[in-house]
Length: 458
Image 1 (cartoon, rainbow, N blue to C red):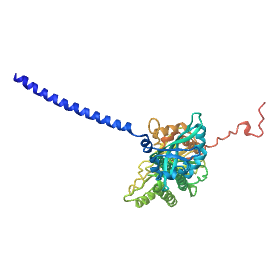
Image 2: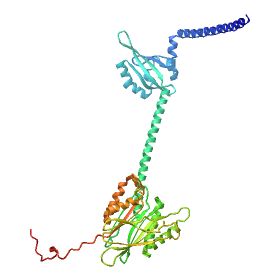
Image 3: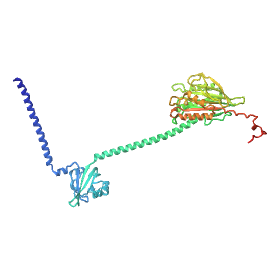
Image 4: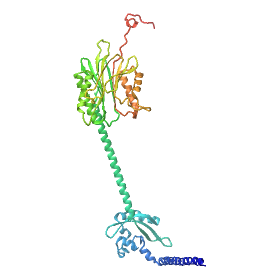
């Protein structure tokens, strides 16, 4: 009995709360019904006058017959100013009037309606009111036009959005124009810089190689990038007395700093060779100058191979050669009988690193048909599909090429450089010195060698 009583009590409480909920729902439903009834009782005039858009009706000639309060408030005008005395065109700006006469009115007469026409109305204070206009011609039972009904929608937010889009477009076009102008200027500056760099590069190399009696000389310079001045250099010049000096080198780095070192090295080597043609003495002089000039926080150094050509006195042609290297790759010697080999120059170290570097002179001879090839490491450091081209690759190439004169050898190596394409990262200089092959003697016992020999029968 007590348990049942306890159970009945909560049930009674729930019934109470249920009654309160149902009462609240009835109140809300009553409120909605009252609001809906008030909406139904709203007059047509109030709906017209206070609509969220502007309304006006005009005669066929455009005279305003009726206008709602919404549009009057937008324009800041009184009804008596407009109704019966002003035309719709009078509410428009000058441009709007022209558009109304040339487009809006003709379309309205032909189609009976127009929609979504963007115009600017002129308010009483002179400000412009961007609007969208839709007009319809009202006709009688016989289809004759009676008046024109026009709806005017406030387009200020839309116009502001359009203007923002136009502004953004103009800014984008201006930014594109500036970018194109900057790119054009950059390309023009780059062309001018490349022209200056090419001129500077040419000034660091001999314009032509001199004609050496009994010797064929050829050179080639491959520029890896027209945007940088390379540090490779070479030269061949007369020392007098039939002797000729030559050198080829590579300065560490690129750009103006490397060009300055290149210029210093080239003219120092020339001056040193004129004073003492011994290749080792020439390199020691250059080392002293560079070691003194470029000590400190910005050290500079280079690799150089220097040599001396002396005609052989036996009258058979050819030259005796003395070669010394300052850390430079060994020269290649292509022999007249075929085959090629590197000319060893041991003991050489980079020029400008040590105060007194060990330098050794290697002596050999250039016989008729032989060619000596000097090059910078851009050739052997070129990238191939497998690996670096390397010393072995160059030696194999020279072995297949020999015997070959200086001009033919340089042409073949230039074609090899072009074939590397993007794999060639560094500038490359090549200098080839070759002795033309000896002319074959004509035997005295040949019939053609004796003027009185009988002619062979036909």
